[in-house]
Structure formats: structure tokens, C-alpha cells
Image 1: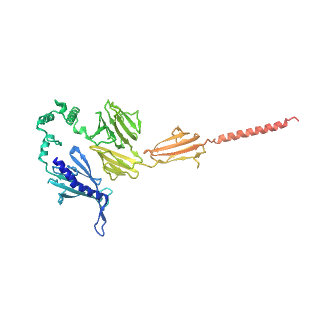
Image 2: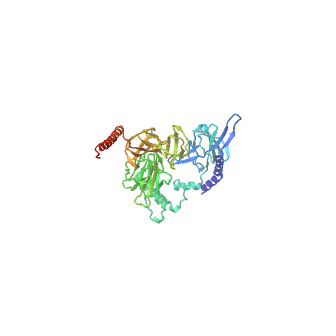
Image 3: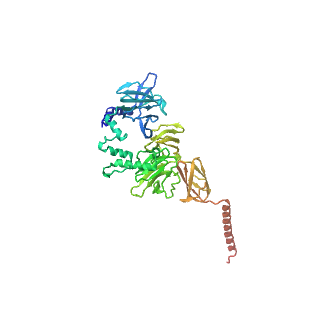
Length: 485
């Protein structure tokens, strides 16, 4: 309780002041004129983004969306242990202890008791896309304090977890529980529900023989993964529904991926896969999912009224109409590249600009994913040869010439009915052709082929007409000669 009170006081008195300062700096860039012939320096506040790495009891901190360093204490937290920071050489550090500036040598641990406030600065010239006259800075603070006797005593009983000091009358029961997690209390009503659940989970873990790495680290909840929990390992995502069904996937729920998606299901799982709102009746879980679209895997677990849902999006290696690439909470974009040049990423998102090739190194815990695609918003080009200004082919045939080199496929309709795919069209009628590129952009054109006879047919018709006329003339003359007066 004493520690919680001090933490709250520290947050209000110290961290509250820091956040107000940060707000002012972020809302308005500060500048300093260094000299008559020197450019003006802009100081730009950058909030430090933090991620907890449970496996190693570390915190990953990101400054200016690019500079990464590690600490054994969370930003703004209280600790009884010495604090270490792993800072790159490009970061300049100013340290204040209990409100007074102190000397600090990079790499040295902080071990003395007190309140620390660190100002971390990095020059814009050391950042991708930064300018020489810019300096980005962030604030990192912590409080090293001595543990109270009550906390030390409590830690001997709760194995590092916060709890009240145990009653002496229950010490023997607590010891029995530590020695045998599967033991049942003689009075189930007196057993705490949380302790019971922990015992069951421990037993299940023992039965499945899963170590911490195999179990994975719990990912944050997301609306793309309803009624389920996700655990990330170095190889895949372990998914457990609220009803206890377990399966595996190579991506987390909510992921927008350029790769194929593969599931590993148990034999007794009950599910259906939806793509763009339509059920995929031919889905084979043994095969990877490759087609572009928005997917939702629905797991019923025998309870169709409360299904679990696992949603994701496949954009493939070519994409269109995307202005920002994002990854789910619990994941981060480590490196972002555009046409092999670095661009800025903001933890879980990166803004996209011009068309070209984008590559992102994505980490979800220890799971490493490479997402790479080409952004293409330009429709494909083709030409229909043989048309007049009115879009009609009086010559009886047309030839379609493809201009773009990224055309994926095309379809042809004759009189609004599907027609064979050919670039040489001769049958009369109204045509519509649609060409698609690899990103899904399309171009459509309609025209008409009018039936027209060839030269021999025209000569034959002309000769036939001449013979008819000659016959009529002969008949009229002959009729006059044989007229009886």
C-alpha cells in the first residue's frame, strides 16, 4: 500500500509535470538561433513508445520512431533495483536526479536512490528523413526507492506477486498448495477461485509438457480476434478459444499480410471460412490461403450462438488504394523501406506515398514476418485496333493490343454474354472487354463489330443482281414481240 501511494504521488508530482511539458513541446516546435550565419535549430518533442518484452524482463523504447533502446524499468515506473539503459551512441543524454543535473556516462547503471529524469536527444541528421537543423528529444523518468519491510515480508510468501500478508493460520495451506498444485482443498467453498484456476492451468501445462517458449506470450486483445486468446511463439501464433479449442496460424488476427496464410487445426474443430462475406465451401485447411480478400474464420466449438472469430486480410504482392500499412497491437514495424530506401514507421503503422515497392520487417514478440508488396494504383492500358471514331468496326474484325506489361488477365463479353478469351475478334455484335493488372486495377472498353461481306461476296451479289436485271429486260422485250394485236 505504501508503494502504491508513493507511485501515485510520483506520477502526479513528477510525471504529471513531464507530460505537461511534453504537450507544450509537441504542440509547438521550439527553435534556437545559434548565430548570424548558422541555421535555426528546431527542437521537436517525440513521445517515447514502449513495448514490454516479458521473455527477458525488458522494455523496448522507441524514440523518434527510429531510435531503439532497452531498459529494465518501464518509463515512469518505481523500482528497488538498479536501472540500466542500453542507448545508441547517436543519443545524447542529460540526467537530473531529484531536480538537479548530474554527470552521467553512457552505459553506467543508476543505483542510488532518488527520482531520475532523463532528456534524450538525437540529431535529425542521424535519422532517416531528418534535417540537419532538427533535434528530436524525448523524456524518460523513473524512481529508485528502498523496499519497505512489509513488501519484503510479503514477497517471501507471494513469490513476487502483489498480495496481502498471509494469515499465519493459512501458512500451512499455502505451503501445501506450492508443493502440490493438483491437490484439492477439503472445503471447495473456502478455496479462492483465482488460486483454483491457476492450479488447473499449471496442471494442464504439465500434461501438455509445454514450456514458456511453446506456450507463447499473450498478445493484446483485438476486435479482429473475438472470443479467443492469442499467444505468440518464435514459430507461429497459438490461438485458444474461450471454449478451450486450440489451433495455430502463421499470422495473428487483424494482420494485413502479403504472404500466404496457413492454419493447423485439430481433428475435432468445427469451423467455416468466410471470404468477402461469402462462405468458402471448398476451403481445404491442409492448403495455404493465397487469394486476395478479407477473411474471417468462425469457430463454433459446438456452440453456434457464441462463436469465436479470427479475421485477417490478404493483399498479395501487388496492392492498390492503400495509404497506410498497419499491424495489430502487440506487433511492431521494425524497418520500413520504399524502393530500397528507409522511410519512417510509427510503431504499428507506416504512411504510404507514391507507387513503388514497399518492404516492412514486422516483429510480433519473437515471431518475425517480412511483408513486401508493390503499390500500383494505375489502371492497365490496351488498344483496340480497327475501330472508327464511333467505336464501330466496319471492317468486320478487330485486334486488341496490350500495352501495359503487368496485365494479369482479361475477360471478353459478346452481347452481354461471356465470350472466349481471344485478342482477334471477328464475330458481329456488341463487345465489352475488361483488362486487370496484378494489383487488381481494371480498364474496360465497349465497341461493336458490324457484319460486312468480303470482296468475292460483293462481286457475287453484284453479278447476281445483273443477271436478274438482264432476265427482266429479256422478258419484257420478248413479251412485246409476241403480243397479238
